[in-house]
Length: 575
Image (cartoon, rainbow, N blue to C red; front, side, top):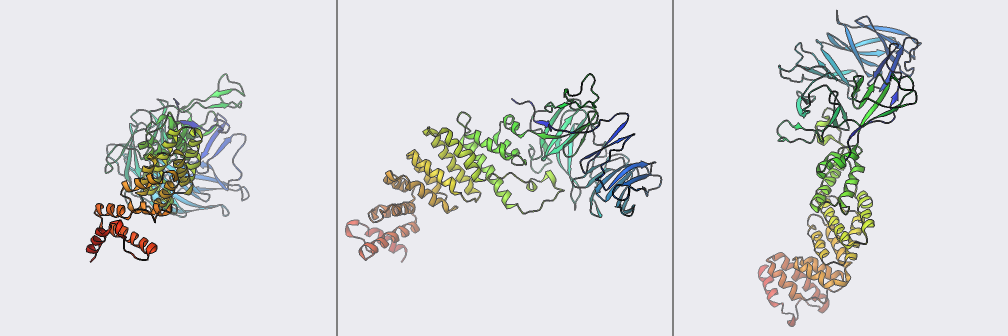
């Protein structure tokens, strides 16, 4: 059994570690590192404008690289304010955060100046900025119980309503120093107050930080040195209540990460070129969204990832596993493997489980193609399942990577062929329930298997396909092709159809094999009469009268056919 479901990227970005001569800064918006040394400035010359320094307590100094290397500065507008941080929302827009205000500026590098666009006077405890959607979250009340969201766009700011919180709860800055038993998650809405969307049951006291990777929430505990994996869509509460979400799996540490020391890392007793096992959850760790981990002392930047292939082995409930995989960007390969395993001899799932798997795959495929052109609201994020892109598994992929592969591996076993026939019949049922047309490759495989099996049991499965005709017209032709391949047992085919009270299907089959002129009219009319279906009786009568007209030039039956009572009954019904 695997012991890790998270790992760090194998090729981290390396930089000069923090020391007494070097400071390191991470540009979260662009994913770039700046190292500042007393002897040399290693700033990226491709940048248009950088913040060179915080000059004093209320002034920011800028440096232009592409305009004659000119320096200029901007003083915050709020009197007696102190600048605490800044965030770039684009190459030419910047937010200055002071202890008294949020100030939004347009930068004009060609004119060496800034223009104030918006100013919000508010007491600030701490802020956090999400560059992907340009959302700024401000802790603004004196008691530390309220959060104020701001959404920044090109030359505009959308101020959302404050996030409501209990007056008895103080919100500390989100960092490794935070302590909480549960994580309360809010959904930001443009036209209504933020709402509690979910509560993550962490249930481990101590310092933590969090990542969002492919809409899976990862919570890392420093003291326990383990991580927890949450899927926002798997809760145990009533849908009308705020969902409490529990970890998908038990807490586990991140997989051990090794680096080759370059000689600049401060590792005692280690020589350059030595392979070093990194300390996870170290005090020197700094995390950024969505999945960035930085160890400033080692000089490494990693991305954290989820091992989806390991989840296959850890989650025994196949339907729960499939629900998780269908919402992951790289979920297709694990889903194909899940389907293979479901059919593999010795590891086979029941037809009931396989049927549920097909339904999940086809529903997701139908939703994906139906919503292909719809626009998503980024504010809904991970809280709205309808906004998520789901993995599409096409019929041709299951055909080539699952069904044919299974047949190749078990082609000498009759029981395996019969099992696959049952699987394909159920797959067709699932496609039909989702209004998805069955591709030719699936039909051909099913027909060939039925012909090879020569089992009368498969006739009943063909009749199952026939029963879908009302809601899926193509099902009839598929079933007829299946039955006609059984040319050595035509009588059994006809009798099977009649026993299923599929009289019209039986007549169509008789016609398809060239025996329409010789079948007994009385037999079919009697079955139609016994069915109690007046419409069916009329249809069967019309068929045989047409046959009489074609063979003898008159719709009347011969005396020896003993069909007079049926003729009289039809006349009485439609007089």
